[in-house]
Image (cartoon, rainbow, N blue to C red; front, side):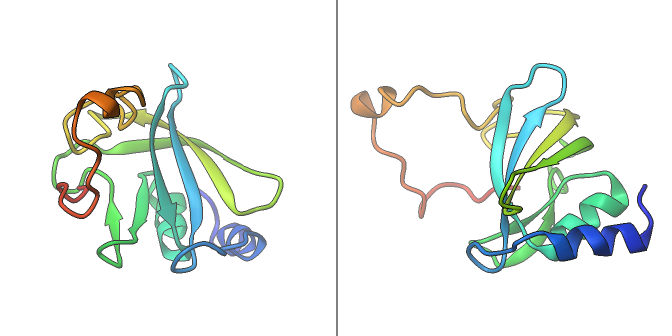
Length: 131
């Protein structure tokens, strides 16, 4: 794990400029490189992630910190984190300990865009909240 001083340096170097003071977090499987999900991290979520080694995110809809897998047991163990050139987005490589999607799918990206033509469009307000 990182020292408290190193964590503070990292937090102070990033630009938490998106909704509710967050950076974008793209989560990828370290082995397959598949994108598992995209979320948001505020300072607290990144600090918890760095100090525990488990993925923590900030829920924009619930306005609270959450440990990915806290209800399902499908934790995401963080292996490596990359930061983009602007300091406002992260790629987080994880070793998944179960499906990443709240639907039970391995990844949240399991549908092709054209499938929306033949089904009802995604209704974010009525879908089940992420775990």
